[in-house]
Image (cartoon, rainbow, N blue to C red; front, side, top):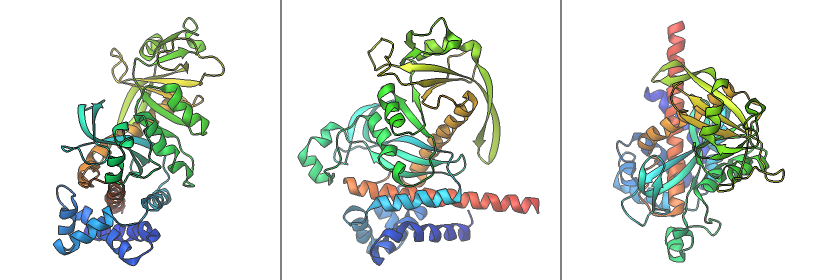
Amino acid sequence: MPQDTKETVTRQLAAVLFASLARRDQRSKGEQYLRGLLQAQGRKSIRNIAANVGGPTVEQGLHHFISSSTWDWMPVRQALAHYLAHVEAARAWVVQPISIPKAGEHSVGVHRGLDPRLGSFRGQRAFGVWHATGELNVPVNWRLYLPGSWVRDDTRRRRADIPDTADEQTLEDCAAAAFLTTASSWGLPPRPVVLNTDVRRVQHTLGQFTDAGVPVIARISGASQLAVDDPELSARVGGVLEALEILDSAKKLRRPVEWTEKTGQLDVRRSSLAVAVRVGCTDPGNSRTPSADGARHLVLLGEWRHPQHCPGALWVTNMTSVPASALLRLTKLGCRVERESAAAGKSAGLKDYEGRTFRGWHRHITLASAAHAVTTLTDMADTADNRTSRSA
């Protein structure tokens, strides 16, 4: 990418992001760390970052800036969100999980568990809230999952500098809170949320968004139990079935939906079969039809890339009046963010913080998100310039 474009974007974004930092030396360290993230090759450790912006003489200062300084990362994230909204309004907020493998036991939040995509796993898990347009996809907020083994251990809390406000949550509640407790109060235009993580407690999790007046669409498994509430499936209405069974009954209602997938620099037209079915939901393990006081009116969305196979993706949403075609295209933002999250984990250093503290992790990942924003904005500017040159 041309260095003059990248330099311009870096200076402009740094001026906006670090305006909330009270001291000049903090603002200088913030820009220094951002530039180090952009320049360092390989793992974005503080030592590697410092090697690209001044060497060993600045390493201690950068370490203190991330791990021990007093600056608040939330105003920086909010400034990033508003900056991106000014460049191009988001089509949706995508809540995307990230798994960070760790060999040791002392980094904040490290635990053993099962990851839906990685299987048996030891490390940290977190959820990023991404500003998503299809082309401009950048994380603007983060929530680190803290299992009970960390939250209930006073010694661990003290060593990792975990604030008193951090409490124990399920993974699903952590994903929902990533958006609901922060980004929703930042004064940004309302947009639907794509909860791009597996949801099991459908009524509980989607109910949080419905109660907050937030439109949401969330991934579910085929085994999720839902109550059929669609007159098109009159023979099934009132029954509680697994989501895959409901979609199997609705195959005759499928319609083709076209959507665009970006492959490198090319926009490729794709097509899937999709159907949207009205459902209610029950809590896990409860096979009864939801009563009026517990029901949530939802839509089950299924997508088939191959007509004769099982649906490749299942979603539920509280956007009951939105057609299946629009819902499916919305989920594709989640697919795009998932790919970019994996790439940014390496290029921007989202997974590379080597410290052990809660505050250090949040400061590093905030600036790594900013580094990803610089790269994405630079690529967009260069693409626009190339298009202009070709049309001239």
